Amino acid sequence: MTFHDHFSAQADRYTQFRPHYGQELFAYLASLPARHALAWDCGTGSGQAALALAEHFQEVVATDPSSRQIEHAQPHDRVRYVVASAEHAPIAGRSVDLISVAQAVHWFDRPRFYDEVRRVGRAGSVLALWAYGLATISPAVDAVVARFYEPILGRYWPPERKLIEDRYATIEFPFEELPSPPFEMTAHWKLAQLVGYLGTWSSVEKYRAAQGSDPLALVKSDLSAAWGDPDEQRLVRWPLYTRVGRVG
Image (cartoon, rainbow, N blue to C red):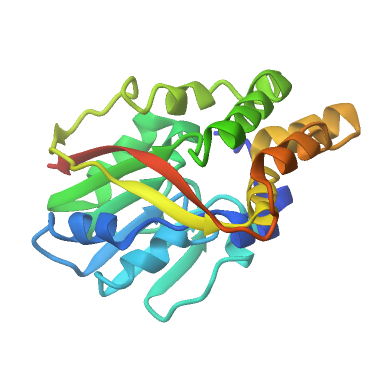
């Protein structure tokens, strides 16, 4: 299949500015499979989820089709990073206890990926998908970010983004679904960190390529006014949209 690369150009900023998932999510996921020998973090990006899984599993194979993302991933002695697609994993059959996909399954050829999940998943293994949409910070800041997301960047979002807007509720999931408690991701950021994060959005790169200018310039002054003191740390919250199921 064709790999639609939305993130290699900003791989260094992705590592620096993308938020990290809470440990309670991974503690929950680790409680589901009977064994904890091997986890596969598919679409790992710069490895945020893979590093957290390494605290619970003996080995983590972290794959991503972007070599640039893998180059910027943080090393860990129990994480093996591999450049590979979701549909062709370099993993032995019936060997994986947990398959995780963080903020990525909407990009996959899902029928082929699900076939690969069935191939590598051990009996009783677990598949966990999750995503997050827009953060909440304050009404004033949220309003500026929403305007940046749409209408400024609206035409530059790929169609797969609609699955996140639907909170993964419309994504096909051909596995025995397990109940999942609510989770959220949080960070305490200054204004520069929020701006850096917004700059990692795939639509921002597409806007720059099409328009020859930086769309962040259109909202920086309003964002600054809504934030106030740029050195003040604010709580940033993203609700996670999860789908968790038993494989085989």
